[in-house]
Amino acid sequence: MIRVAGTANLQSIFFGTKPISAIVNGWATNALLRQEMASLDCMRLSSFGASYLAATPVGLTASKVVDSPATQRVGVVQAAKGEADVFLKGLGEKRDIKKILEMANRASMRREALHTNFITPPVLKESMLALEKFADLKVVAQGGYPEAERCRLSLGHPDVFTSDPDIVSALRVSGNFEFSPCSHGDFLGAILGTGIVREKLGDIIVQGEKGAHVLVVPELVDFLVSTLDKVGNVSVTCERIPLEALEYQPPRTKISKTVEASLRLDAVASAGFKISRSKMADYISAGDVRVNFETIEKSNTTLRTGDIISVSGKGRIKIGEINSTRKGKYAVEIIRFL
Image 1 (cartoon, rainbow, N blue to C red):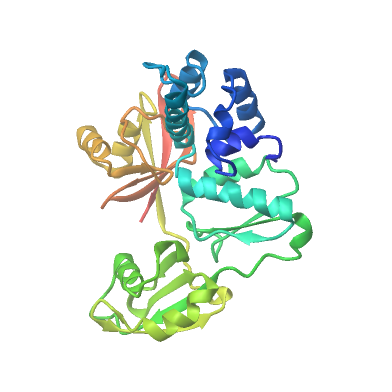
Image 2: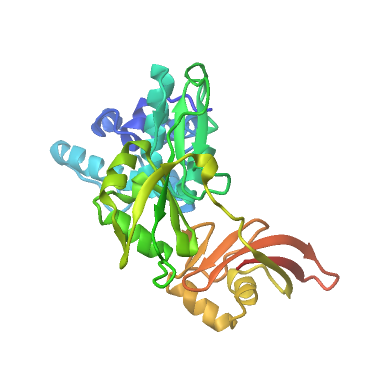
């Protein structure tokens, strides 16, 4: 659990609690920044950031040192901002994670409960890893049902949580979709068309000709009930339903196995999606492939058990058990979502 107290210098870069210039008064040393970075363990330096920090004084660019005192401060502040961006990139969706860590700090210090909007799986994953370090902080993730991808986080001191907060509501969107079937994108577009931002929406569970179930923040339920009246060309009605009434069917899957010389993304994914390796490489370079919901553009990315790979327009697979063969290859179990 991260204790943020005592890390004001680093917070001035990452959290904005003090002006960035605070770090450069007196020309903070590399050792100080490394010490603060270690105490705030959630910030993981990229390999570039670590080597850059080791070779370059804090606030100085690698190529230029400004001479005059008046311009030193400007150059230092600009460099500090640039370095902060490099460091934060290691956390994925850096802005969202930064806000969550700020919120956690506030909730812990004030002994109150705070709640995020709906966040994506990569942000959830990175945030949960970082939040493990906080002292006196309870974290609850809720998406409305066990397999939810988009979730909200509740953050607060353990004393303020007597039960899981009521921060996710469900809507049933009904209409005659028998002759005009609508996709997930159709429902999403119709809802966003009412003026709601994506962060206020959780998962959308399409129910075929019956419509869809939609997870949303409670404060927008009445608005959607009175506003959403059409999806595609189909007239619809909305009503609030309890989370227990969600109709969610676990995804159908098909299991296959492949033997590969390596665990490279292009090799395993091409086998899982039944397409050529060169075609898979094209998808990867085009940014159409995601691993654990993050876009990957390197074909040689190594996969592990539990990784989820999705390809635009092709669906999704999950890597199951991996075993080594006698010939030094890898027998990989692939779970294809149908």
